[in-house]
Image 1 (tube, rainbow, N blue to C red):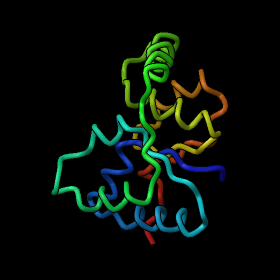
Image 2 (cartoon, rainbow, N blue to C red):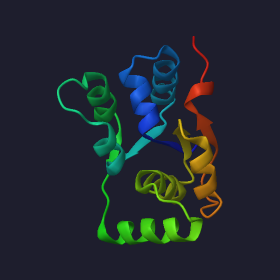
Image 3 (spheres, one colour):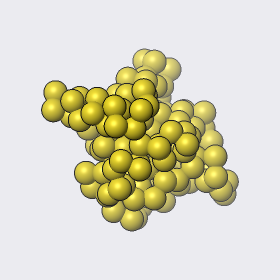
Image 4 (cartoon, rainbow, N blue to C red):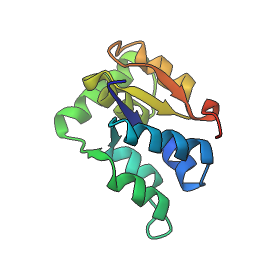
Length: 132
């Protein structure tokens, strides 16, 4: 696996202390997989000091900023795909840069966007991550 780009649903699963999500997370880190979290994902889930688990995950990840050029690319992708979720588009474009797999709870919307960014690796559904 090239790397992982995660969406809000995965960070929420970690925040809710879902064992399968944590096992998946630690397995990826132990295998040396680079985990990327686009900055809009952080904005979507961050609620301050009550996010200790999210903070721990972010500290072990690369938080990718959203530049003005990236913002335009996101808008163009939304236009081409006839979708509206800015965060999902950021996740897909981010993953596409590195051919990362995407870990998401929003498989349907992510698949629609991936049709326009074929360099994305596999799509992993948070709900299908097995519990240890």
